[in-house]
Length: 294
Ligand code: PRP
Ligand code: ZN
Image (cartoon, rainbow, N blue to C red):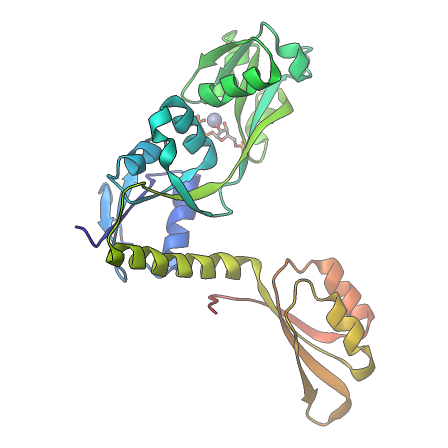
């Protein structure tokens, strides 16, 4: 078992889907039997453990799993709760499962700012993060801990305010709540255990990370191809967002036109395409990049 990487991932939920998609794109064959809580991946010596997301920090901290993919919010809450477990090392910020831990109150209830929180009851699933925030703000308020469906607390008279994760904002709106302050931003992180590993295992992680980096880079990157008049090439290449030196080639049978190919490391918006077209570019193609290395 020493030369196999065990990775803890969320059993089900939004983070679970994104975590599995990343690992599959990194070349792992993942075929889950319904109900099975472990799965030996194909392609690399990796085993996945499917667990509740709030168990991931402690499983990795204890070395039961070598790696884990968890939300920054959960990692922080667990770290504050059990100070001994703060020695997890973040190896990558993964850019998905982005959400914000926010304070929100009933729309017409008169609570509109952090300064209105003194003496209030605040419902949350993240009591440690909330307590730290209140302490930093020098506010005394009462925390009411709920494991889920926190947004229902004000309507039930359990709390005046909530502190919960917001992604699209639909849950807040559906429950007549309006956010008024941000407690923390969060995204998925890949963390590793503090245990010492042998060289083979370190090499395996390095190999997996190179692939993950390739996936993350390719997600943000597009390949753009276009044709343009020779005298507009300088203008046009200057418009390409985050492009390395583009490849510029003659077009067969067209002395006045050139083809431009470039890898763009930033989002290419419709605005940019319109500006390119206005400068004479045509036959513009924007292509996804599946994998990147080197
Ligand atoms: C999460 C979170 C919010 C909601 C935010 O709840 O706790 O309630 O999603 O998403 P939105 O802004 O896109 O509406 P989840 O669905 O995980 O349920 P739970 O909190 O009851 O576990
Ligand atoms: Zn919720």
